[in-house]
Image (tube, rainbow, N blue to C red; front, side):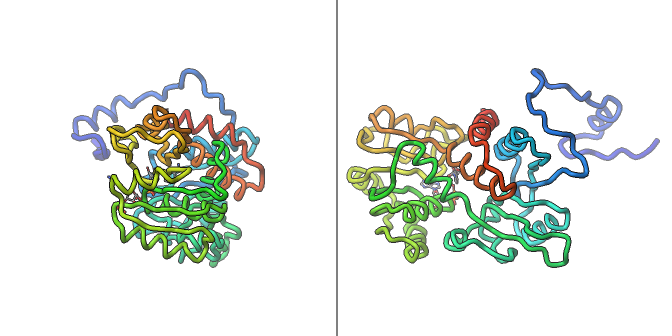
Length: 327
Ligand code: NAP
């Protein structure tokens, strides 16, 4: 009898033996998916998502739906790259002829030194979320890094009916998402932005990093109930850039339970899974306008699509594929 490998995820030798003797049938999905992407062949162009982990992402669904809608023989695949392996990951990407990639946690910052050029916005933010392979097949491939998060945020904010020019804004959080938000707001002419964060040091660093690029007044404060309520009272827009409210912590919110949220505010939640967060529920009950995080996810993806393909992105197709993937 030949050797039997114990497959990861199957706990015992007996289970593995059962699998080998009774392999699972390939099941057709019902209903038959509507996508009609051409078969993968020698002309298929590849892009992907480099991160760790990448299995939960809605980006493959959004990008592949966009390729399908535009009749492009392209595919977008998840590419798990372990922490510390980003340089090797990018070299592999170019060597395999990929046209580019999105970059996500934990590589957004670490990827910078591995790139040939970095766009000014990404340099200012200190983070890259899109790579375009401009030339591959040589020992020194040419790869450009960009960041579409800030523009994606501003486009979805405007789509939600809010004009940031001259506005007074409170951003809660000082991580990667908050950096893109603050940079985008400053570039779009916000009057002043107050960054409230649990760790004051991180908020202060964000302010000093982005001040050179921001005509707006940027201020850092530590996150506390009083600071939040006081700043929100005088603001036009409140942005949540923390994971509070996301799947696994749906019952949490930056806003205190017992207080009504001011009706004059627009509230933007970066969290997109679930789309209807506790914070947005509180905002609606208080009479405020709300914008959920899906639009930003879609817009940053649409901008990346355009960078890779040179074609206009089918934004509504991407939105409905993103919605479907998050359901
Ligand atoms: P990150 O870099 O890890 O930063 C997380 C931020 O949240 C930090 O400022 C952290 O404060 C704060 N935070 C975490 N737990 C907290 C808590 N219990 N109470 C108060 N503050 C807390 O994460 P990120 O990449 O910015 O992402 C933040 C959220 O935005 C995630 O849900 C992410 O999915 C979402 N996001 C959405 C989009 C989109 O396209 N819609 C884009 C980017 C991010 P400390 O500094 O004190 O730790």
